[in-house]
Image (cartoon, rainbow, N blue to C red; front, side, top):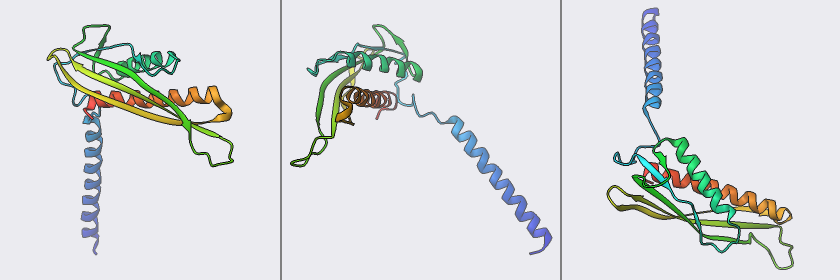
Length: 175
């Protein structure tokens, strides 16, 4: 390979790398993960206080879900949040909170438990007066029996955070 062909080859390689870099930067700047499938006529969203139908006897979790949903949608900016009469409505219902052993063999002492929370959600288009979706979201986390109350609470809060992320994603991306 002579000096001239090496120089030409090197120039083309540098130009190609630069072009790929520009396409990557511009492409990443234009892509938006959220907001892609929120119908354009839906500008405002009202989020109802979560209803607890689980019979779990700790109403704090309905407040945690409501607060997290409000915070997540506020931070996402796909909608303007309103107290009532939004173009869209989001209603959530805790339908179950179940706690069970992870795995215990005969003669063993229980060391770990699993707590599962299920939340039903309705996303309603108040402008067109139709339900966009009604879905059930469920998550679970494990905790050690030795950490009983604090471990259970932490596991539930982690599951609730994951469910709220799932709900936001379902609303703004149509998944």
